[in-house]
Image 1: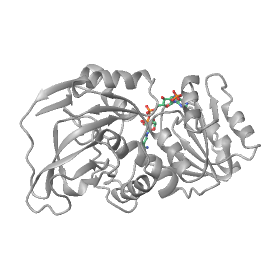
Image 2: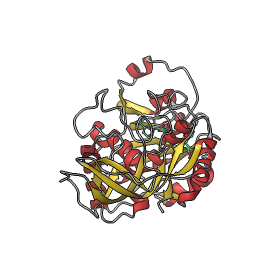
Image 3: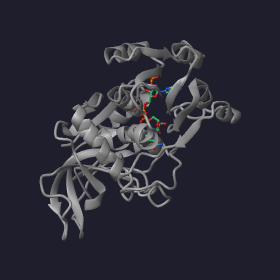
Image 4: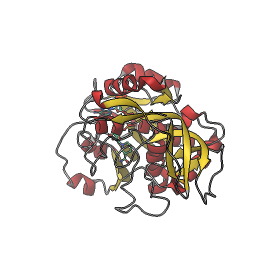
Length: 337
Ligand SMILES: NC(=O)c1ccc[n+]([C@@H]2O[C@H](COP(=O)([O-])OP(=O)(O)OC[C@H]3O[C@@H](n4cnc5c(N)ncnc54)[C@H](OP(=O)(O)O)[C@@H]3O)[C@@H](O)[C@H]2O)c1
């Protein structure tokens, strides 16, 4: 089979394709023929050696997010059958309950080999079934980006109809957060650095948007849009460079979900958390149980992820270059062979 490995990490030259024997399943394991994979900002950090979460495996098969069909079963498999359409879960050991240090390791495309291969082997426990209305390309966008947005707003947060959600940028996590908030009947507010992307948000029915490049005091503009009241939930994807402004956007008693690390360095005054009586949550992707709840909602709503562009399997490097250029709106997908 064809498989990509990062050899060695450091820059985009690391991504190389190899021919290797097809993997064989052990007891309770399954072989998945991968039909699509998708990229996250994390994958750029991994390939450039700046990820910083524990050790990245040597000669790693990259990417955590993918979708495919079960083609072979190891001894004793009972959870899935041949032909099932499945998505791997991001943290292979986090099936249910609260996060712990063990569950936060064994993530695909980081500490463990990922999905950018024609075939992969996983535990039968490490997958969920794809909602039937989604293509493989669409399903491949869910395991990290959608799961993280869902975890923040519904598993940890208590988002209800009539509340407001601010989410930063127009990348994968942010657009899922916006779509989920719309589903819940919440008001969606966003910031983006691009007027052409802001126009696309308007097509999605999202018009409370501020350009953070032309309006560096975007937090004031967001507060103005709420008549000074502030927003109920902030999906914080910028990290150190945006968190202080995000806290200023909160209404008193609101919730901030600390997820990302897109935007530079800055000092944050922790007294702002007290001033806003804020609930600040650190979020890591999600468990299999959360993934299954999210899939139910996606199915009932017949929600389709926003895919910017699909690359063929032999164009993986171009897909990484496109991610690095940050021109995308939503998800970047690599098709299987
Ligand atoms: N904690 C977790 O478990 C977890 C899970 C998933 C992702 N993450 C993190 O969440 C972040 C987003 O990931 P992703 O995969 O969704 O990224 P992505 O698809 O690459 O999205 C990046 C987008 O963020 C926006 N952006 C860039 N700089 C910004 C800034 N200074 N202020 C506001 N927005 C900015 C840009 O949108 P515009 O062009 O519209 O401005 C850019 O296109 C990353 O830091 C990632 O590592 C964490």
